[in-house]
Image 1 (cartoon, rainbow, N blue to C red):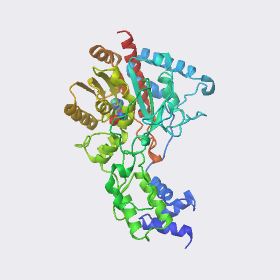
Image 2 (image 1 turned 90 degrees about the vertical axis):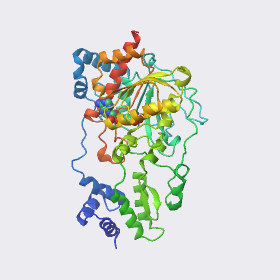
Image 3 (image 1 turned 135 degrees about the horizontal axis):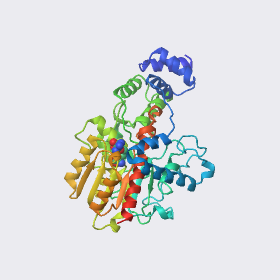
Image 4 (image 1 turned 30 degrees about the vertical axis):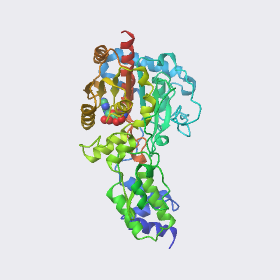
Length: 451
Ligand code: SAH
C-alpha cells in the first residue's frame, strides 16, 4: 500500500469520508502529518473562512469612544498621535500599527522568563520607567504574548511606553501560558506564593503515571484553553490504539501525541485519554478547588481558559504587600473569575474595596461567591467597561480615596489557541476593549492627580 493510501485508510478509519480524506491530501500534500490532515478536514467543515480585518483602526476607535462625546474622543486621538510619534514614528510612518501590516514584530524572548523568576540566579533586569508611567495608581495589564504583528507595540505605546514583561507560566507551573504583562510595579524583591506549585504533570497528578505510555514524552501541559477535546477525538484515539500494535507504529504515535499536546489530554486508562477536569485546571492555575463550580462545565472551561495564572500574577503583585500594610483599593477591569483578586488574597493582601467590571454573568457569580466566603471588604460589581463614564470613574475615585491598583487583561480569548480558525480574538469589537482599559486608567490617573 502506498503512503497515500495508508493515510487515506487511517482517515477513513477515523470516521472521515474518502472524499474528505482525498481533498485534505490534495490541500496539504501527500507528506502532511496525519494531524495536519485531520485539522484540514475539520477546518473545511467549519463554516466561514478565517478573515482578516484591520485591527484597531480608526473606525474601531470611533465606535469605542462614541459614547463619550467628541471632546473626550478628540483628546484621546491626539494622545494616540503623540504616542505614535514618541514611539518612533519613522519606521511606523502614520499607519495604524495594529493593522497587521507592520514590518517588524515584537521580539518574544526565549526563554520567556520575564524580568525575573522565583529562584532563578539570572541577574534581575534594571528598568527605568518613563516619567508619565509612574503611579499612582499602580497598574497591571495582561494579554496573550503571541498576537498579530504590532499589537504589543501599540498596547505599550498607549500604556506610557512601558516595555512588556513576557512570561511563560511553564516556569512556575506544570502548564504553559505565554502572556505579556505591562505594569508600573517595582520588579525588585518579588516573592512567590508558597508552597511553590508542581512543575510537572506527575508532580501535579501522580495517579496518571499508571497509564502513561513510555512513548508519550510529555512532562508538562500546554496552555490550558477555553475548550476541551470532544468525545469524538478521544474515542478516535482509543479506537486507533486498540487496532494498533503495542507500541503503536510511529505514524500513529505521532498522531496521538500531537492530539494529546493540542488538547492537553491525559492518560486515564488503557489506550484511554481524556481532557483534564475543571477542578484539575483550577488547581494548575492556582485557584481554590471548586472555585468555578456551580456553573456549567463548558462555562467553567471557558472562564478558566481565559483567566490569569494566579502564581505568576501573584509573583508580580507581591511587591504590594509591604507597600500597603492596610490593604488596597482595586479597580479590576475584565475581572473574569477573579485571578487578580485570588492572587492578592493568596498573598495576604487585604482588599479594602474592589470595583469589579465583568460582563459575564456566570463570572460575576463566581467572583461574588468567592468574595462572600473569603473577604470582608467592599465589592462593587459593574457589568460593562463601556458604562464607566468619566463621571462615574471620578465618583469611585472620590469614594475610595483613589485606587491603589488598576488591574485587568482585556479579552483576546483565542489568540493563543491552537485552532487557527478561532484566532479572531483581537478583531473589531473585542480588540477595541483594550482602549477602554487605557481610557479608564487615564481617567483614574487624572482624577487622582487632582486629589
Ligand atoms: N483576568 C481574568 C480574565 C480576563 S478574560 C481572570 O483572571 O479570570 C477577559 C474578560 O473580559 C472575560 O471574562 C470577559 O467576559 C470580560 N469582558 C468582555 N467584554 C467586556 C466588557 N465590555 N466589559 C467588561 N468585561 C468584559
